[in-house]
Length: 318
Ligand code: HEM
View 1 (cartoon, protein in one colour):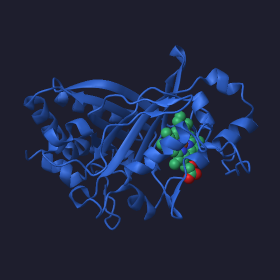
View 2 (tube, rainbow, N blue to C red; view 1 turned 30 degrees about the vertical axis):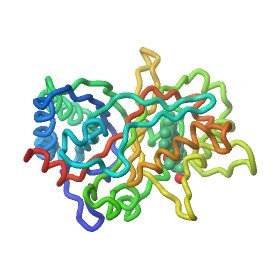
View 3 (cartoon, rainbow, N blue to C red; view 1 turned 135 degrees about the vertical axis):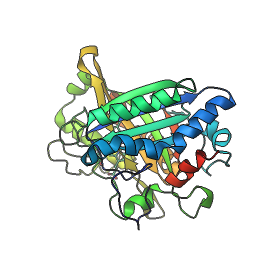
View 4 (cartoon, protein in one colour; view 1 turned 60 degrees about the vertical axis):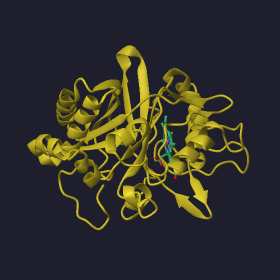
């Protein structure tokens, strides 16, 4: 999480603005009870920068990065600090037809690189060090699919903020000085019933997403009634549009019939992501939910706060 003014260095922990990568792993862990587990986690997180550098130095061009997020349940015992202002466990969003489920998660490790072996190696080393202190709740291995498409066939990530807008949208500032430089992170693991998606015509699919499939051009919604995913996930308050940073990745295994999208959103303001989920699951107007959800089933849902690199490093000092 580099301030906008500072230059990018090749290896740095907590880089929300790391380039969207070809490979990623999303690791959600719970921390076991007891001070010994917390001590282990503090020491590993405090040294995360060193670990990333050790593995990442083996191929600087592969841009290895790792972001660690901490959940509300363990925030204060782990850090000794008050909760970031908006941090709380993922709140389920119950719509008439679809529910955004809330599932356990005390720690998130989001590891990215352009080489699978580097991602694998850093994950292996981290889990070795954390052994006995944590349990793996979910491990999802994501891959970049053609020109950044999801498994539904659409280019995913286009409307992400770039340049100066990126830290503005993702990094907490003066509104919460104790946690400045950190970022709220929400993850959801979705699976897709691809058979039924394939029965939907390309035109209908495009209306659901709000973009054309082949060339990714934005489409206007109908004058009234059903809104597209693109529109439901656009949050405008008092004329100001609030963006988030997404680094969704496809995952799956054709052999076992599993096809999915791992959603990850970084934001300076947790309420913005929560508002998106409300508009998607409950609908706008209520009842007209995001049709994307008829083909995307949320299996998990957890919220974290990724502290700044400095705050993370300080954990190691006890
Ligand atoms: C836009 C896919 C879940 C927030 C898009 C686009 C696609 C897409 C294809 C259009 C291109 C782009 O701008 O990236 C998916 C899939 C999902 C998913 C496959 C899960 C199965 C979510 C969730 C959120 C979200 C859970 C927020 C909580 C957004 C936002 C945009 C977007 C903010 C950009 C809207 C704009 O300003 O144009 N998504 N999405 N998406 N999605 Fe999703």
